[in-house]
Length: 282
Image: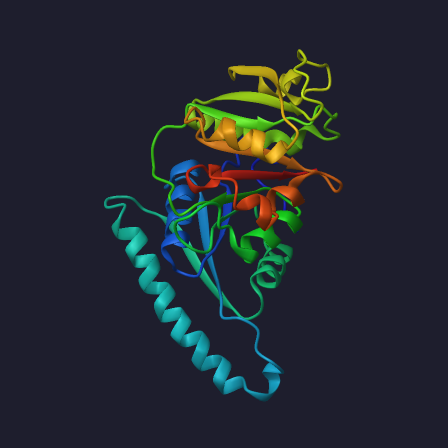
């Protein structure tokens, strides 16, 4: 789904390609502002992708689709102008794209045709505990590359530490973790690799921890264990402590990320009302 990016290029090619699916809501606005903050407003290219939704048998209603896209284009241009106005004196490399189809379908189609290093998207809904919405959920779970989900309550500020949910399994390709490395270096943040033991026994660091990798050289890291019968709720308590500015997880095919997105769990979790979630895919 994702093309090669700066994490796989040589040192002379530094520009990252950041894709931001948007519906121009306040939540989407926060996602754009976070992307500019996290990746550098003037160093990279940002693409705003707006879906006008599914249209049944588009070949039968081409004029209607053109009308809908034109209306969407005008609204997206105004939204982009608003973002630019928030960064006076800066030259932002922002392009916008309007497409029809479901959000995941247009994201998938775009990333198949264009190199993308990161997808950043906001959550649906405002206020209350964790409201990622179905679009963010589907993209984050099924993307072939890293995704950052930004809550509407996010406010710009320093990120001192990142909480990494460590399942203590070996990471087959360490390049998978490079987005986490880059973000930590950008913010000058440390990374806490925390493993939740469901048997409620706190153990010391184990060799399988991703935090033991040389890829994190130069970054302040710690490896720890905590006890809890529910991984997501244990992470919620840690992330909601105020010590962390971001939560990172590695989504494996048989991992526990599905539980993290489950609505019954989501209602009990407040962490993502304040901190962005980085989802890495092995």
